[in-house]
Length: 463
Image (cartoon, rainbow, N blue to C red; front, side, top):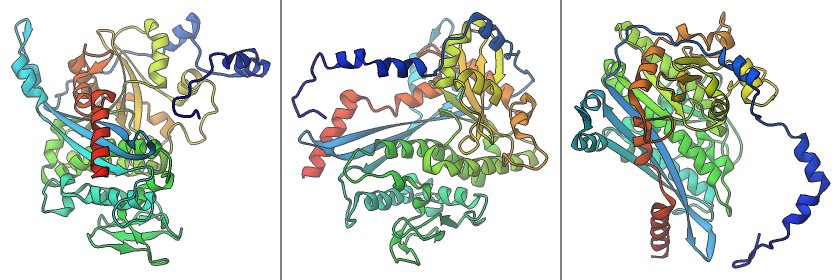
């Protein structure tokens, strides 16, 4: 690391360029390479005309997205940091969306009204070298404050009712976990171990008063089950943990809506589509949530089926990543209006650059939805995911690796394609309106947004 104000030499790289070990290493590396024309034609053969069937498009779209920023206390103390996370939700009434255009022009007043239907949830978190309240370490501060944020009235649909909080949604999902850590009771959950002494499992209840580890007496929190505290650093940037938390929140917030509506207005879920930014997957210490998501979604769809209603539609849209990089190389060979459900053989042959296939299948510990590639009739390319139609990847009598890519197992697939065609946007390459709007209201820009948060942090901490 350089001293403040020290500039790097303009010639240091010369030794690296001349080093034969560097050249040998680069020549031995494997990576995603542009395929030949013959390989591209073989790839294009996997894409087929999409299924079509008479289907009613849901009337409401809810899109979520997130952004985060880590602010330093002072230029002289760059290692002292506070983190900000913003999760936004945008609601679009498709009847209003369809009425935006009058003749050859779009009505700007209706566009403005459409954009106003948004809400945001902001989390302020202690990061490097920041301690909150009575807590002696950054890790303990992070744990305590995270739990308070999840329980806060800001996350409740009814401020006076704690059972509508985001923390109660976490209890509901944790109770569905398979194995010894599942309780089957939405008012109780189990931590895999105490963060202080390591003993476990430890059970906690959905109540406001402090709870303690029976082994060491240390205070423990329901949100400890997310295990985000495991990666917290005391004196270094916690960008990794903050990114993990943002990802968890991006997925938890739609399920928070679904849980509330399933209790208060179940049938309305057939009229709502949830758009999420990124794959339907959870990575890192909280990856266990993906199994609870699978179980919960299938429970909700089972209830809807009893009322002869269409299943809930959730779409995860990937703007970037390995699959999009792959399609950039081959999309000119794929005809318009074509669809492909990515199977493991294809993924490991063409996308993951010859990596050894996972024993239980790609995404066994992380994904709760299947990835599709869709080239629309207008030539745009979308990589999107739909939830798996099973409660488990290990259901008896089911060959999951085969069944997960069958179009017929996804009854909402034609509806998802129709929505992508309806909502595609020229604002960005291969974009859809809901995700573009959600990103607009959550993205924290470096200038001026990040600078404003830096000033806020410095003023507040020095007060």
